[in-house]
Amino acid sequence: MKLDKKSHAVDIKNAARALKSGSLVAFPTETVYGLGADALNRGAISRLYSVKGRPLGHPVIVHISSWSRVELWASEIPHYAYEMGKQFWPGPLTLVLRRQFLAEDFITGGQENVALRVPSHPIAMELILEFEKLGGLGVAAPSANRFGKVSPTTALAVEAELGELLNDSDQILDGGPSIIGVESTIIDCTNATPLILRPGGITIEMFETALGIRLDYVSNSSQEIKVPGSLKSHYSPSAEVLLSGTPGPGDGYIAMADIPTPKGVIRLATPNDLEEYAHSLYEALRTADIQGLKKVFVVQPDYQGVGVAINDRLIKSAGK
Ligand code: TXA
Ligand code: MG
View 1 (cartoon, helix red, strand yellow):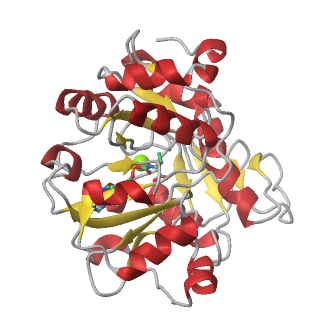
View 2 (tube, protein in one colour; view 1 turned 45 degrees about the vertical axis):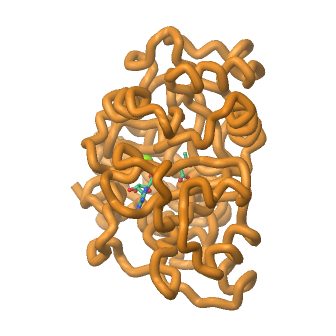
């Protein structure tokens, strides 16, 4: 299918109808673009998996319009999860909770937990609200990339990733570049204390300031819940991502703006701060592939703020 900015960017009611009738709708969120499907429609979810090339059994996040919808999908909600939802929704936070019966195995990967998020991007929010008006209860949406690849942060990147796999009734909504640029923070809320499963747009410092709790992020490998991002190679461009070593002429390079570009090296991003780094990272990796680069050398940012999420993605994209 072709990206039609004019009609698809504005006709959200039409997109909601497409979702309700079982089609796929890629839409912008503040983190990355998602590939949406009706979370109650087994057939639509099965197509979603095949378009993404995602192995069955990996759970997807259900996007809802507000906290008031949580109890449709989840139960046994701990108090700290309420506090997190109150502070950070709508926003780049995903809560993993004990599932209610609506969350079927084809959404949860057969686990007893469901992941829920209220996104803040106005187009995502409007789409979900319109979908709910039609009787929809949640929009399942993984990042709109092929499995294991870099998440798209523009509608054009979605088109490049998935365009040929979508059909005429599917849609791609264009909402401009995603502001944050890395995915939501995922919190496991199924125990007495919260656990970060994936660092993201809501940072450890933000939780500490808002809730007075210090969460640590330990690498996913020891966690029981299946998180595809925990596979060793993920968020990967075709180019090899290297986190050490010296780039040579013709290699790509990503580093903070104050680090000069070595001679003959192709600079892919020059972020001035961690937010800019997150915002530009995936597009920079995509540009490396478009330019046919073989290697991208990356100078990792500090492990603070959104830098924790950036480093998590960099380590996984280098892990092949
Ligand atoms: O920012 C985001 O979260 C984006 C936008 C589109 O909302 N979505 C996204 O979805 O990143 P995806 O599928 O690419 O990554 C979601 C992660 C996966 O690693 C998945 O395993 C994990 O969330 N997840 C989903 N449901 C889960 C569950 N029930 N328990 C544990 N992890 C879950
Ligand atoms: Mg993803």
